[in-house]
Image 1 (cartoon, rainbow, N blue to C red):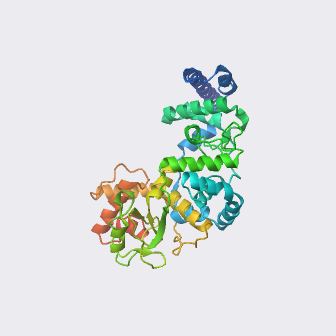
Image 2 (spheres, one colour):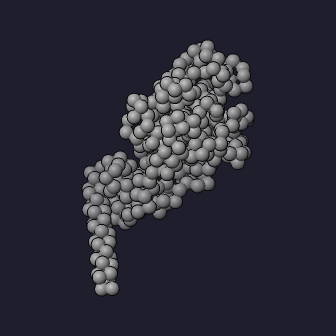
Image 3 (cartoon, one colour):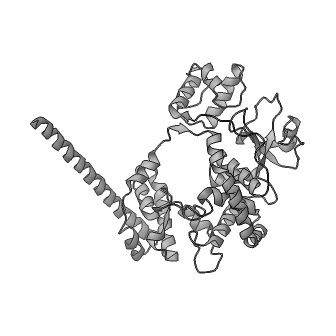
Length: 395
């Protein structure tokens, strides 16, 4: 019994020492951040109101380092985001803000339905903007070595925003990573693109819908939005399509896509203006197919996810009166990252170099997967189907 008590006491002391070490490291980091903020021109008053009261948030580090156990399928992603509720609410808000939205379209070139789609996906039209204290979150991340430089810069921008607009620290809440307001801007985007559109003396993305929508339009415009062009469209592939041209790096003129037998989703011929487009099949050959235009790439500069860009584009179409997808995303089970690592290892073993197995199907992994599928007579859509797993001997 004495031995067990001794061990328990030692573990308790060790745990306390570890906590003290973490606290000491955080205090030292905050002291360094105060110096950097001072050098960046942040006033001592602002520093003491923020970094002088800052708290370490363990949950933020957990979320930052957490690797999702499963790779979400397009069906699970898309159907949870492009919902009938968002379409209905987007249409109502489109009418409610039609005067402002028309002005923004004239000035920035962004059609109203796209602003509604971004707004809906980011915060459910402002109904949920996040509850995490931004200064605490950014300081915690700045003191973590994984991406310290990036979050230090974002923290200093957040301090400057507070100083410039006299925001109350307790009102500066957002996502665990520090994204803020109706449009979930990171502080650097806030500082660069936010606009005081209602002329009340500050660009307030939390409380002013006018500021938020105007800032979103400005952001998209600055990212390179092309006036009078769509995001892309759902298309129908011919039965014999070989999938040799897939993804952003395989862009072709619409005239070239038309020669392959690809049509609009309703079977009508593709319009062929002088535009480049890339083909995406996010659920593999059994699911919907999309051509993404230049504005698809702009959406991905807002969020580097093909799923996100397709969801924004389709939600915008639906809000603007468009019909649901003609080919619904097939029901597919999420794939564990461990299983994807097995797939990547198997591809490497067979001579299809996809890099270090990490459980993430990026561009190189999909290219290698396509090459393997083609070599064994499978449909080379770069999608990790059950048939592909079985072919590689993975159960």
